[in-house]
Image 1 (spheres, rainbow, N blue to C red):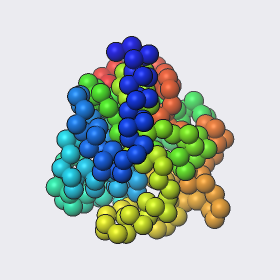
Image 2 (image 1 turned 90 degrees about the vertical axis):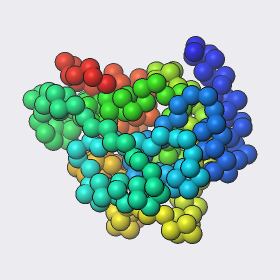
Image 3 (image 1 turned 90 degrees about the horizontal axis):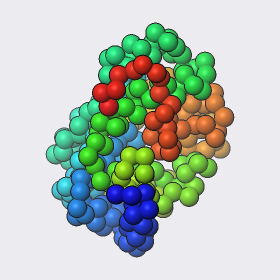
Length: 251
């Protein structure tokens, strides 16, 4: 599919999704021709989506990126969520050779030293596993919301991702955090206990801190960098180029 046709399909799909509720949005995507994959970080938004997929028995694959640096609370929530909704969350791990190459070049925690090193770490621990998770997919479902950060303020319900050759679906784009929390409470959806300890956005343990009163939701992610750079690359065009050279090409 050409970039132009991909963008046209995304625009038409965005218009259809806008008037639907969450279950309707996900059901619409599940009914489209082509494989749909939802990648979850086990954060509160993603738990809402996983619950909707499980409760409605939708034909959407659920996957997570086990980076090797996740909080123990996040890892424990994977199995808890599977049991709660009788679903299988497929785990994608970084390649051992990629990690070894990264450590040899930057050190285990070299991501604190430069933006380049941090992007490289995200590349081998997230971007390459994500590429395997999305291989052959037509639709990629995410938990992106407009209220998460300034970078995400214009998030649509559907958008073309020409680099990956698919359409990205953001079914919670118009939900605010208060709506998310109310829904979780009403539906008794299991969530990461770190949310109650000041972590609205949870990623890898070394790269996530609790936020301070008045800070944006994602202020605790890569807090030592400037705001405009605080993305891991999963949702940034051409981010796949920000990975270390000579690493495994298995993804």
